[in-house]
Image 1 (cartoon, rainbow, N blue to C red):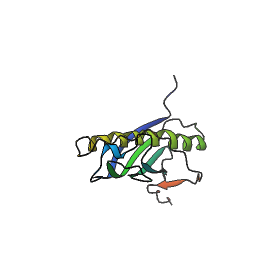
Image 2 (tube, one colour):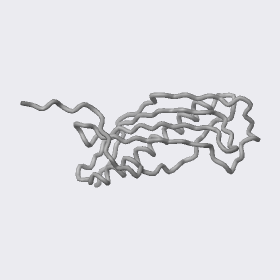
Image 3 (cartoon, helix red, strand yellow):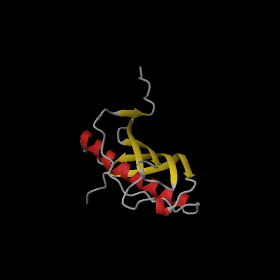
Image 4 (cartoon, rainbow, N blue to C red):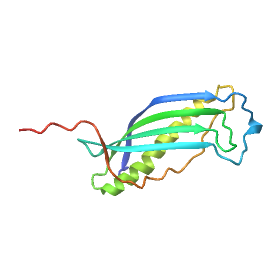
Length: 151
């Protein structure tokens, strides 16, 4: 039986800011337009354990170009993952981290925002599912402390 190549160790919200837009009315929000969603993921490999990956997502939701949102949002979500397949090539690991890990965290952010806004003065904010492409720049980011050389 083949194992799952990526596992979530834990995640947390480092920053969570939501502000109700004063004077928001459902009639002002065209149903065929999406809000301005800015999602900036960073994927970093641990310095001592390349199978451990940290993903940081900065997410903002704002009104833009006539699309009025019920809430302005700023979130920072941090997740820790482990690549479970040691034979997976580095490019495949990066693609997995950018597609699966970012999607898992974005889903958690969607749920968190809906929960925060469900009891607010405006209608709850449910972000649409989005595709977050991997960045063109595949330079590796590293986090964690490297061990001091022995000797």
